[in-house]
Image (cartoon, rainbow, N blue to C red; front, side, top):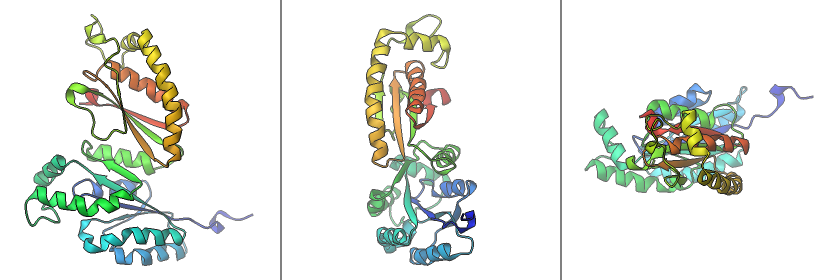
Length: 291
């Protein structure tokens, strides 16, 4: 019987990259907190050498995160080829690509008063140029994270969800929201539940939220809701396994009503339970209740 120390280790290399200002440094710190050996700004020319050292070390590293960004210049175009070579060496290599809207990136650079790495003209022009340069890398990335609405705290939590501990089963993020405040920008699926009876017009329920048992009963017990959930159950029972078979690591589902306080919250809570019953991981966020 082989001892645990005799079993070959298959290193996992996670390349952390994306648009400047999208949160790479925060993501690197979060990965370090959950046990990744992190190296930021390692030159791409040294990546294969570093990988060999990891494989041949007396204590091989199992989880490695390498941060790279636009400052690599023309050598960035070599990354797809380098990734293939790492995989041929027996290393599981994947890319986490962080991005945000232009408006958010501009705001972040102005708040920190740091220049954009490509800023030899206007900030918006530099961001547009970086997007174009980084597009081929984005296209081969397994993990795409929109950090437009993320704080450092929520980004760290999302990194922990994706890469810390048990990772069996696709992770489904469920967001309740109000259409009058605009939908979240990073959804894969969006459910509009404004057709359901609205507790806002019921005395005694208006001031409560979908977290309240009375509101939940009001929303869930209507025939329209039961019919909707029956169709939704069949739809998701078919769709979720297909997304997982595709290799999608996480899925973002939005549930919207008018204000994001009553119906969307109740349906999102039901959806969380349903997703878990199907064997997937689920995490729910109520945007308007957390604002």
